[in-house]
Image 1: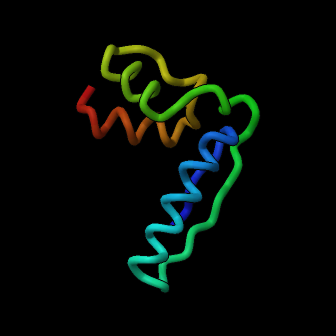
Image 2: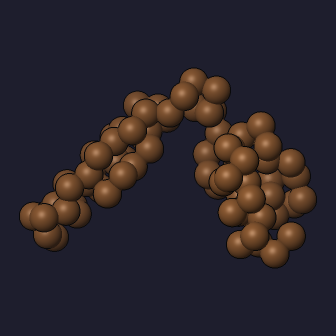
Length: 75
């Protein structure tokens, strides 16, 4: 599993999740990736909410992600 980390709080949560997953199946491995500083303050929940309210998410996600999210939301 690939998981993104923005803050130390993310790490605490993701570490617990990783340990639970590994206890369910020893073959499940988790790799943690840190974010670029310019994206560290925004969560995926905020991006989805902004998109749901017809907001511009261009400054928060790469263009390919924006296009994908827009296509999934039928906007």
